[in-house]
Structure formats: C-alpha cells, structure tokens
Amino acid sequence: MRWSRPVLLTTALLPAALALGGNQAPVLVPEVSQHDIRVEQGFTGADLLLYGAILTPEGQPVAGDYDVVVVVEGPPRAVVVREKRQVAGIWINAASSSFRSAPGFYAVASSRPLTQIVDARTAAIYELGLSWLQLSPIGSIDPARQQRFARGLVEYMQRMGLYHEDPGAVSISHQVLYQARIALPSSVPTGDYTAETFAIRNGRVLASGLTRIRVDKQGFARFIADRAEHAGLAYGLCAVALSIAMGWIAGRLFARV
Amino acid sequence: MDVYLPIANLAVNGLVIVGLGALTGVLSGMFGVGGGFLTTPLLIFYGVPPTVAAASAASQVTGASVSGALAHARRGGIDYHIGAVLVVGGVIGAGLGALLFRLLQALGQIDTAINLLYVIMLGSIGTLMAVESFGAVRARRKGQVPPARRRRHHPLVASLPLRWRFYRSGLYISPLAPLLLGMATGVLTMLMGIGGGFILVPAMLYILGMGVNVVVGTSLFQILFVTMATTMMHALTTRAVDLVLASLLLVGSVLGAQLGAVLAQKAKPDVLRLVLALIVLGVAVRMALGLGWQPDEIYTVVSL
Image (cartoon, rainbow over all chains, first blue to last red):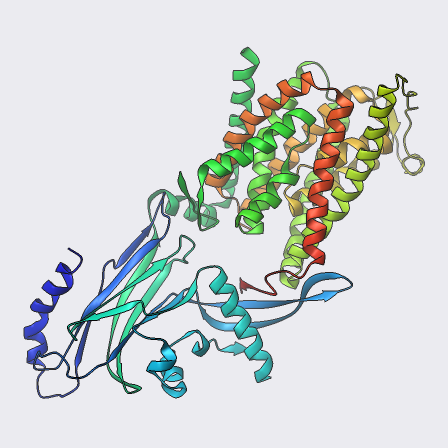
C-alpha cells in the first residue's frame, strides 16, 4: 500500500515530465504525505512521508547512481543562545549570543551519510547538514565564538528533538522513486515549513524540488492558544474561575461524605 | 492518555500530570501548604517550560486552597482584617514579581534566580522545621510536654510606625509588617509559582506573633487571593498560563487534597511536620545539586 501513491503519482506526472523535453537535466517531482499538519488535542507528533520521482526529461530513469537528500525546515526565528559557566561554585548563564534566523525545526534525511555525498562547499551552499546551517549571527564578529554558540544551539535543538540528521533514511527504488520518513515531535513550532529534495551525483546537484508544509494549531488547541495571546484578561479570569470552581466543588463533594 | 498542552507546545501523558497534581494535593491537604513548591520543579523536570510551569502551578494552588480556606472560614479561623492587608501586600508583591521576572528573563538569569530562591527558601525553612519537629517528636517519645512558646512579635515589627488593632489575631501592630510580609510572598508566588504558605505560616507565628488558631486559615485566605492575582498577572504579561495543564493539575490536586485531609487526621502533627520538613529539604538539596553540578545543557536557546 505504501507504494501505491508514489507509483500513481509517477504515472500521472510522466506526460508532464515528457513535455519538458529538450533540457537534459533530470526532473525531480517531490510530494509529501501531509501538506497540512493539524496540531490539535491529542497531537503527539507527526510522521511525514516524503516521496517522489526523479526522471530524465524523456521520462526514463536517470542512468547511473545518485543520492537523494531531503531537508525539512521550519519557520526561522531570532534566538538567544546562552552559555553556562561555573561562577562561585554554581552554574549560571554567563555569556550569550544572538542569531537572527535559526530554523525552528530542521531535519535532513539522506540515502548515505552526507559527508560521502557532498563536499563542504556544496553542503554550505545548499545548507545540507546541521554543521552548515546559516544562522546569521547578530553582533559578535569573532568567528570562533560564533561557531561555539552555533554548535551549542544545534546541540540544544537536537536534544529537544527539533533538529536531526538521519543518514540512510532515504531509500531509492528502481532509480526512480525515493521515499523518506521524517518525524516531527509534538513540540514542533507552528508555521510554514519547506521540504526540499536534492538528487546529487558526484557532489553535484542534478535536480531539486520544493514542497511546502503548514503546521497549524487547530480546534481546541488553537482556541486556547489564541485566547491566551489575544484575550489575556478573559483568559486569566477563566483560569481563576476554573480553579475556584474545581476546588469548591471538590470541597463540597467530600464534605458531604 | 496523550494530551496536547497548547501553551507549553508539548504533548504529555495526562495521567502523569493528574498524578502529579494528586501528589501535591495530598501534601496540601495534609500540611495546609499549597504544594506549588513541588509542582513547579516536577513540571520543569517533566519538560514543561519553566515559565509555563510556574504560571500554571499558581492556578493549581488557588484550587487547592479554596476548600481549605472555606473550611477555616466556617469555623472562624480567618482574621479578615490582617488577611486583607496581607492580600494587598501580596498583590503589590506579585506586580513587583512580574517586573522582576521580566528583568531577570531579559538578563537570562531567571532560571538561576528561581533555582537559587528555591534552595535558599526551602533549605532554610526546611532546616528550621526539621529541627523543631524532630525535637518535638523526641520530646513526645520521652513523655515531656514542650513548654508553651510565649507569643510575641519580633522587636523589628514593634519599631514600625502606625499601629492598627487586629482583634481576631490579638495584635496591636503596624499594618506595614503584614503588608511587607504579603509583598515578600507575592514576589515569591510570581517567581516560583508557589503559594508561599510554608513561608507565610512561620512568619505569621514568629514574626508577627499571630494566634495559632487563625494562622493557617488567614494564610490560606492570603494564598487564595494572591495566587488568583498571580494567575491574572501571568495571563496578562507572560501569557504562559496553560489552561489544559492547569485543569489536569487541578483535577489531581483537589482530589488529592481531600485524601490528604483524611490522612492528616490520623497522623500526629509533629510527625507530619517532620515529614514535610524532609520533603522540603529533599527538594532544596536536589535543586542545590542542580546548581553545583555541571549541567547536561551548557547551552540553552530562547526566542528573542
């Protein structure tokens, strides 16, 4: 069953791919199992299936081996990274550095370890891999310091489950179809995500394709988050009323027993 | 049972949170403390962001203190006069706490400040309680009757200007003393997500010199209103009150509180105090270790 959708898709898109003829560059048609991720009550994370096909403009499988890298990136945000140091026996935040655009989520899946697929230059251009994220530091110009904080940021986000590298998570079948699974934890930030797929051979990008994913709070979760943000007074009164009512009811119930 | 917390942005096991609420509820029923001092650290330990933990724990303490306050009110155990002064102080303190919270957050020291406050407050109060209750338990074992403590307020309180009569507490003191005490607990409530009962009760006894029969009720009365104010303050400033999280905690704690109240009637008060002291000290030691040991996370990231 898992294969049915990619296969159908490939057949559907073959004529389109054929129509593109003339240009020798292969065509990459990416697709994702869910374009809208609904964060609602009971949400425990999502399992994204990213799949698609890579074909020559004639609609033939691309001759020769290639690798596929899939990058899912969440909405960028400005962050402060703080570094703890031991001061007078206790560990406190002693230094900090700011970054203008750290993705809220970043996952890269590849058919082989990234270092075997691309060299540093290509990796840096396409931001393939956690060590090549472009975080745009603010202020500090000392590169060693920047690097230390950038590494700290990546480590932290990895521990939170929001950044990961998954070499070997992409499988390619019949030189045409690829598929990868990327897990989003329940703590994913909401916003617009991009999923970019690259077909790479000999360190060169043969073809790439982009799909978009939207992660949004829905239903009750959205209602609560929205009220908390935009109607603080009513929300607070509601919280107070709720706690008083529950405390009072429980008191009454048990007082009778 | 997976529950998504819309403000904490996290899925949690709802039963674990209800259980946690129940645990602190039992404590509050047994000892007359809000139990916030245990909720906040445990929530943080579970992965809930510290601000959300503190903000939501405050509303749990409200729920836990309602039935207690009502029970005390019925038997006349609340001095509303001094209670009102304490509440006014507490609300002012919560406001100051909110400012302090923002300042510390901007400086990146909020977590360290909260941890340090926990270590200092819990450590000192826990030690005092442990020493006192251990002595009481031992004295009772030997069959001695502890000498009655002479009730009087601290000399510093007497030096404050302006004096009011607080009839039910049997006091003629400056209202500034309870006002300042209320303010101090208000700041702590805002910062630590605690009710402050374990600070308020000894302070009312030994600093203000209030009568024992109104101390617990009046403290619950103050906690009730100050945690309400704190919840409002969080809802308006940090926007970190998670209603789903608070509801789960409340379900657990209001039920736990009833169980605790039943248990409290069966146990000896000095043994209860000793147990509470040991729990408080345990939390303090855990927090102190957390500050002293090299943390797993040298780097932390927050949104700008």
